[in-house]
Length: 178
Ligand code: SF4
Ligand code: SF4
Image (tube, rainbow, N blue to C red; front, side, top):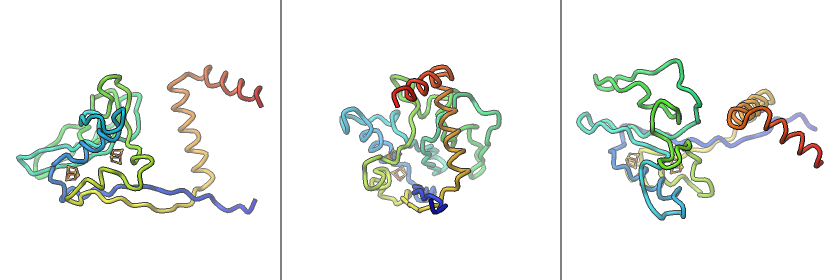
């Protein structure tokens, strides 16, 4: 081992709120891409990007579906834009029990942006004719501690979902196979 840190690609979509005109093309293509079979339908309720719209104020804010949260958070954000106060949680990315956004309408399962896995570029970016969305990639070194932290977060969510006993049983079974 050389002791060199590993590299990871960080993918981001920069949102220029001033350029968004609220057309919702991003919602349409996202829900179409993720429908089963692909492109068989488009229902913005299934989209992993939602545009918070306030046409009277000409305010349109695209928000991407982020992590699943099993419980409501203790702290809330309050946004005031052009003198109007928006709902707490309005611009949050989490799929959480406090609201219906970022949940699969039929099953209630959480939705999360996957950057259109398998595509060269996120489709919402391609379809945004106003250029409100810009895709960027950068390479970052991964510190060992960060990898450990990511592993712990991953394990925590598995334990949340399946319970510690089930995870331990599975690991025990896998070790026996080896
Ligand atoms: S496609 Fe672009 S301009 Fe239209 S709502 Fe989405 S982000 Fe806004
Ligand atoms: S990057 Fe893909 S998955 Fe994510 S919101 Fe845009 S269209 Fe949907």
